Structure formats: structure tokens, C-alpha cells
Figure 1 (cartoon, rainbow, N blue to C red):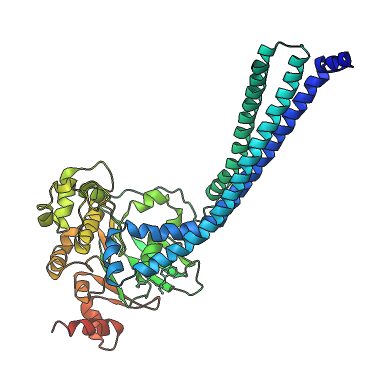
Figure 2: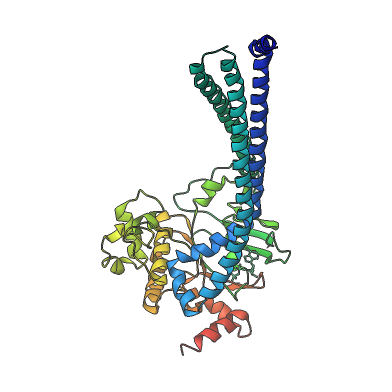
Length: 442
Ligand code: ADP
């Protein structure tokens, strides 16, 4: 009997028994880790919306410019309540996840102990039956443990790759989203004299998320070097027209031509070089003044100074501790806060630095004081000399600087002409807009 047991212990199939135990424990670890990975993924998926909302509200803490409104209108409590809602929800999901982690950790230890017990049993019996020396017991058990740890490590890497590839799939889905914008390849002819003619041919447009037409049957030609003003009530479609011009959207109907060719056919990057645009909601970054103006880390100092001067910023620049190297906004070391008007001047300087053939200014002086505003208008000719200028403004007096004025109402062009021509008819929208503003200045 003793001899028979010794024989069994010494046989290859007793070793096989240990290998089977090891394989079983490895398989158990593998499935457990996969399960945890899946649960982790569903945890993150359930948290996407909450995380987005949380980041939105949390961002308020850093937004210096929001501080005054939040304090003034006592919005602190409503923001904290929203953050609390998301925190409580996220905490509930996290607790569920932690329970899973906890169970997995316990199960992992139990599997490890079970395997080690089987090893001690097997190697111990061999020592008891004098098949190996007592001194070798620890050596063999350690070797088996190391072997299993090594194999578990390989499995863990495999599971991690499997799990991470699921996250990667989201990213690759994102990268594979088809570009719906027509990508033309035509180069834009470089013209020293900036002779670019733009034509809107029966252009109508609605935003992708809304069926309501924002622009209807717009027909107009913008000749090279002209100064064009777009006027109309809020929501008339003026900014949308500019968005179509710079291909942020394509027209729903009709076409826009540059020198007779549909703008869709041009290489987008080359086409965009034609435009310097200051939108109403322009953004500056927490970089130095010069880097903001040049929109680059490399800049030509003289040109930066020249553009700042033209935009009416130079007097203020003299007060800056580091001149054009002064950082703006507090994200940067010693960054300074600038007023809305100063920011607007910087945005104008940035558009001038780009030195494009067509300058578009959407409400460019809305934040400027009357003196700065007058200064910009006075030098408007100089600012856009040799370029085509498209100008959106609610300050009707500024339209007098333009050769042609187009009046928009509800997405339609209802009048065109010079300031004097449009004022002749006392019953039109332009006259109403002009008179409404003029009465405050008379
Ligand atoms: P304006 O510049 O003349 O004040 P806009 O061109 O900004 O007018 O807006 C025209 C209309 O388009 C408005 O009714 C506005 O609500 C709508 N609109 C603007 N942007 C969007 C958008 N991204 N999605 C849907 N509708 C928009």
C-alpha cells in the first residue's frame, strides 16, 4: 500500500494533477479579471453623462470670469446642488464597483491559497515519503508559486489588452466618423492684388438640427476691395451667412462661388487662408499678447506691434509689465486679466496679423468705449486697405463707412444700397433701424 502510494506520487500523472490544478486556478483568475474588466467598463459607461455634467460644473471653479456673476446672482447653491446630484449618483455606482473589486480580491486570494495548499500537499507528501529531501520543500513550492505568478502576470496582460481594446474601439469609431464635408482639392490662386470675387447664388440654409430656414434665396456679389455692411435685427441670419462663407456649414440649397468656382471645390486649408474673421464670440487663450496676436508661438515682433497699434491697443500695451510678452489670463504665470474691450482689440489685431485678402468683422466694436470705437472707424479705411471687408454691426452710423449695405430680415435680403440710398425711403427697415438709434444721439 505504502509502496503503491509512493509509486503514484512519483508517477508523471501526479505531476499532471498539479498542472491541472494550476490550469484551473489560472482559468478562474482569467474569467474573474475579464468579468471585473467588463463591470468596470459598464461603470464608466453609466458615468459618461454624469462625468460630463460634473466636468461642466466643476470647470466653473477655475473660470475667473464667471466669479462675479455667480456671486452677484447667488448662483452658488444651485451649482452645488447640481454637483451634489451627480456626486451622489456617481458615488452609488462607485460603491457597487468597489463591492465587485472587493469580491474579486477575496476570490483571488482564495484561489492563490488553494493553489499553494495543493503545492504544499504534493511537495510535502513527496518529502514525507522521502522522494525529495525536507530541505527542498520550500524550494519546490516557491518555484511552483513563481511559475504560477508568472503565468498569471501573462494572463493579466492579455486581459488588459482585451479590455483596453474595447475602450480603443470607441476612439476608432470616433476617428471613423465620415467627414460629410465635401473636400475639394483645387488650389486657390494667389493674387497679389487680392482680386477675389465672391458670389452667393440662390443660397438657402437651415442648421442640421433645425428644419427652419435661417437664410432664404440669398443672391449677392461681393466684389474685390469693396466694403460691405450686413445689417438687420438679431437672428436675421447675418452671422450664419459668414459661417457659410468660411465653410463651417455648406448651403442647403444654392452655391457660393469664389472667382466663378464653387468654394467646395477648393482645398479647404488654402481657401481659409483668404479670411481673417473676428466673430462676436471670439476666444483668446492664456498665452502672451504676442502669441495671441500671431496665433503662434513664433512671431514677428514688429508686425505684432504694428497690428496692435492699428487695433488701438498700443497705449494700453505701454502699461504692460512685459510688453507684448505679458501673459493674459490667470492660467499662465503672472497672467493678467484684460477687459472685454481690450480683448476685442486683441482679436482685431489677430485678424490683422493674419493679413488675409478678406476681412470679416462681426460686431467688432461692441465692447469698445466710444473713443476707441470712433478711433477704429476713423482708421477703418487704413485697417482694411487693399482688402475686401465684410462688416456686421448694429451701430448704424458705422455703416456709412461702407460702399454697400445689405439689409437682412428673417433670413432674406430685403434691401441693398449705400447709406444715402437706403435712407431715401423712409418706410424701410434700414430707415427704422437708423432712426431708432439716431434719436438717442440727436
Ligand atoms: P444674426 O447674426 O443676424 O443675429 P444668426 O445668423 O446668428 O443671426 O442666427 C440666425 C438664426 O439661426 C437664429 O434664429 C439663431 O437662433 C439660429 N441659429 C444660430 N446658430 C444656430 C445653431 N448652431 N443651430 C441652430 N440654430 C442656430
